[in-house]
Image (cartoon, rainbow, N blue to C red; front, side, top):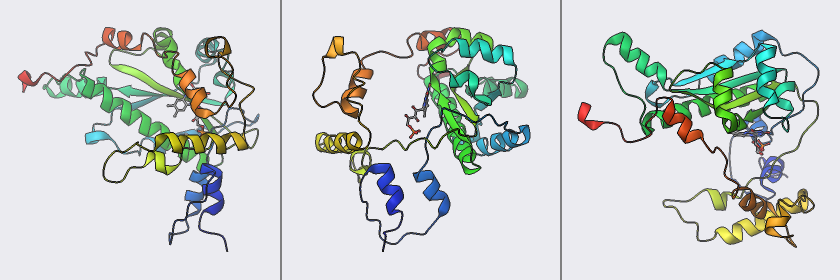
Length: 283
Ligand SMILES: Cc1cc2nc3c(=O)[nH]c(=O)nc-3n(C[C@H](O)[C@H](O)[C@H](O)COP(=O)(O)O)c2cc1C
């Protein structure tokens, strides 16, 4: 007899994870098997369905009920082409049947203040952080909703690598920033499941403890390599040399030495955010 979710857990983690007694929920099977899709069939996604997905997205929970997420549904082809041209190595940005951009919108709360005559300042790190989280939750809720009806998605955070031009194309006012775009469409291929770190590395009981990280990552690297080797795609060998065993952790450690999002903090500070502590003297 198979254990509950055995196949899905093996697909996700490359491991057998005994769960004990758990409810059988088909939707959870689908979540465990979810994957990003970057190639889409030549099949339109009806506007009515996009509206439904947006309604689901904005049903996500929201810090303090402040509702600081916004989305732009980028329908105008010329604007979309300008945006896509900034990222030629990600052709799915221009090719996906639907493209949304999820925004952290710290401006709306200040506008509410103006309307009500209270004038909150929402430019501290707290305001930025809360807006970013709300937008990320809406994004992921949209992803899961889309996958539930057979669509594929790909979040697009590279938008922030050309933040000034993207903000101009999308006419973003101060205190509004992109968290990520989202490509949507019917998948053109099955795609593949990206194996995750074992729960032993990501879940801590009672207190943070990463003393066994090295062993957990080593085992993960080997399992991932056995399923899908990337040894022939070594990143920047001229800087790092050629590794005999090239696993996920070596790849990510190399990738992380290249700074991303350079200029984002400067752009945020030039567009209304101080990113500091809230001004307690105003209370
Ligand atoms: C916030 C966020 C931003 C992302 N940005 C990009 C992106 O700019 N381009 C891209 O092709 N994929 C992007 N992705 C997709 C990730 O690469 C993908 O989720 C990851 O490789 C794990 O794969 P999986 O979602 O299939 O499990 C992003 C994902 C997230 C959550």
